[in-house]
Length: 559
Image (tube, rainbow, N blue to C red; front, side, top):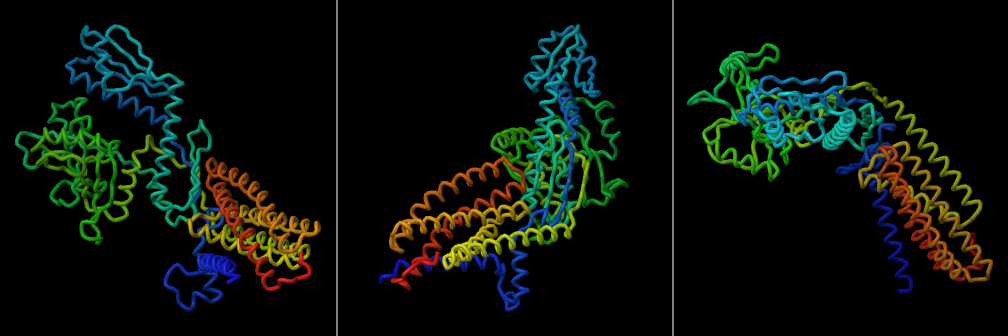
């Protein structure tokens, strides 16, 4: 029972080693005989490791957020909301005007009579936020304009919001470790690199997809059965007396399954028009979740179910409670997708139907969950990184790694003799377990990641050198071999911990503030350092203990 502890240590090492080899070289499915041939092992290795853009190839996109359009849309929406507010307050407006050109964004409202402008301002401030706008008054006219500093702040805010939304859409789409970052603060440009993307056009559509969801009341004729629709936009306008007031909108209404309705020749779908109340009862900002749901058990014909946050659910519930027996429009991107008859009070959920395919339903659900982009984006640069570049990078990285490893092995065997074998075993095991850890956490290996792996080799060698030199020193001081080995490991371990902790802290900072490839470098280096504490200390010491167990009276240590 003397060597019980040694056998336990050995069992732990063997179990971890076998698990590491299987994670790196084993199949990810039920194995067959071909998986364990030389070619099968190579195929397993290629499929187990997720490669980045610089190794595998993929898409490189540079896009720009149209921040001027964002400010224009903001001005127009504020003006519309202000006019709707004044109409509800029975305040007569003589005219209104907006300016959205040449960096000037302003809105002016002129009242029809001598109404106190302060009443007008107070009414508008209750509905919209004009705190960032510069206000001026002249006679019966009040004007709000957007200062230059505020414009820049809002543009920056729009780009940051777009960055977060694009990131959530790309992550949900399943792209492995994309690079997504701003190129410069003033340009509104965003860089996106997507490794291994097979359908970049679908990703581009998903990124740029609009997702403005709104639930709005349909304005119906007396005793509607069914919902009141109009064959043309002009007919809908005439139902309002020829002028569309600020609190009304005319929207297209598409029923995909009804062949008896007029067909728009541009898109070959039956199209009518409905009148809805503005503003919306609830909009997409109140959305909590959205998901694609099959109505036929996965055989096509998907719909999108959605649910609201508590505040939106409360608002929706109060409105539906007051509008039983009325029609509600589910509006997506200014198009009525469905018209629902309100039979009872509804609080927190709804659905969008219309025979969506699985892909379109999932994409729409993703865009709804991530929210609407604050402004449209345009693509200024698009490149595809070919697989030949990736193959060259892989070959160069592997050759550099193997070359460095071979040099280190030769040096350790020459300089430390028999103990060098100990270091070589620990070193190779460190590389295998580091790659296994990358596979386990599904991290992406990039060219900087290979650099991190090579640096990890250097740190592992440094750890062995510290231990072996300390053992040499203790032997020179006259200590017996078992005692020299024990003291050498104990003293060197403190130095190893210090160097590893400081390097890991630096790597964590790189991961927190770096882009995709830099994160890959940091992850690989951190894993290599953590595993090195196991291989350079636990494994190496176990090998020495086996040597002392098999040769208890050895006259000298080959070191």
